[in-house]
Image (cartoon, rainbow over all chains, first blue to last red):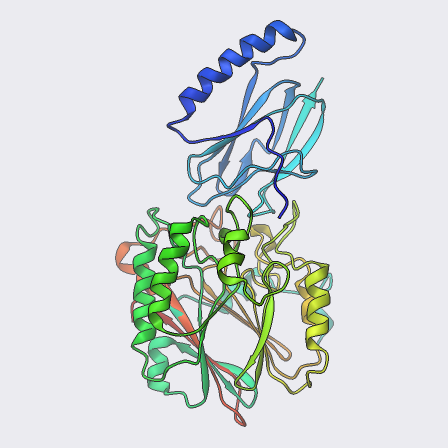
Length: 124
Length: 315
């Protein structure tokens, strides 16, 4: 089995979320000083309900961290078409985050239910 | 096969057709093979009355051990009830097949609990994985370590018993975005090779987790390259395809091929297109056992088709 590349990604449970958020803020401040051109602290959300990613198409600027929250009673995963990222299976109320650093269009799907698809458009 | 039954190289099935041939039930399907053709005997409870003579095996599916959401707070408990039904059968089946989603999250404790309960039936069990069985960190290693002995690739294999050639296929691995279930070129090449030298009169039973035919693509209920496997099986006089995944009974006959999906032992899912999503369907607690079950199949040599009996936990 191929091990997924997991850089820039994290999976959180509701209890761990606060700690991660605090860490993320500290990192964001640190990074903002170094690379002021990027929106390092920008955040966006995609929710998973009824086997659907919403919004299905999300436009963000480079440096934005996107978090997927699974609200279904069934696990889902988030897999980028070209294997840029692959989350583990997210059980109910678990989430996964990935920071998009390069401009481009990223198609992703659920590794368990591949008819579930979404798109992230990253502007420079 | 008439052209109007085919669409884009796939068997055509409209929603009305799918709903018409749908039956709600839920423990296991008892199969019998008569005259080399698998025939449903119905649900396990009814099978007792039928008292099938011949070679019989059981199908169990979608145990989802570890699932504890409102649709069934105790999936391990309903699996135990299903196994109790198996133990109570007067005519012992030769073996069981499990068409996947043994566990809900591929956790070691879930596999352990499933094994402990299922082994209580004291029957040999032939497994194929569901997508829920390969979501461990190493994507399928846990499943293969437990159940993959003697299998090829991601867990496919074949064996012969009771004069029938059985083929277990894996269609839940390396799925493509926007696609359905997938067998892949390696497995199809193996299947072609596996069938070489088998006479056309050999009854064939194929089992896999996701339906091999296109049931409802909007919900991913079908296998992208399933038709290629069915084409390889075309020359055989009797082909029975047993699947799980959709947690409800759907039966269909296309020429020499009988398709059958089994109920889950854990929770029901809605009829195709009847709900916003294929997620677990909440039914009143007192109704739950009427939509969970098992299937039993009997093979009767020299007589009529394989008999499938689906049994709910309520019976």
